[in-house]
Image (cartoon, rainbow, N blue to C red; front, side):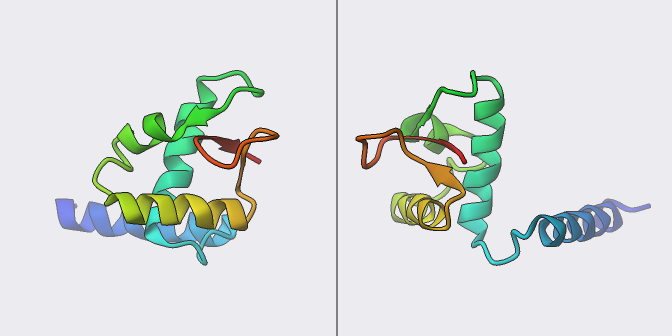
Length: 96
């Protein structure tokens, strides 16, 4: 199997998983942020939050332009995939 065929197979599997998880309506930036958040939060206690700085520096988000990154965060908050700590309006987040 060529590398391009392997890529196509992986891309097809990813699309299928996104459909199964109900993530198809998310933008590519939102998907990148959500994936990075899941990776970063796994290393933390369930009550801890991930800073936007740590999230932005993750390999999946590092190449996102700042406006796109922050628009993606706002979209994930609006769609209730992410939550903020009580009394905060930005800066640290965790998965709902």
